[in-house]
Length: 173
Ligand code: SF4
Image (spheres, rainbow, N blue to C red):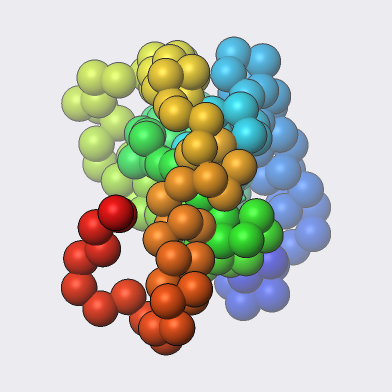
């Protein structure tokens, strides 16, 4: 997202560095109060954190207030709550590559929302991080980077059956 801002939207290198200096502490807050890895709390913890950092950095880059920056980070994480980590074959490829791209766009959306919703907000960044952590602690281990459940297993089942794609709903025997 910052690469795009640098090379397509005309922000200079110093501005990008300043944006990273805002994104960094957001990541540190999440790491301190919860975590930043799919192995710990699922993908909400990994891509959700990255999205929060990107949203905060972008909000700063675009000159939003400190409240709007915090709210951008909150929105970005709030809409990743519950996201599992179930990478196909244990590789950070499916769903990871597309998921990162989607999260970059979500960060942009979070910043746009914060422009006109921050004055009516009800949920704080700290609250959503506490919620993410609680959700992650309760999450079944097979959805924490083990590739023992979800998309990883469904995909492998169909590959073993010789089908190219899943057609219809799969019921495990
Ligand atoms: S699903 Fe992929 S991107 Fe998300 S936490 Fe797991 S390995 Fe990382």
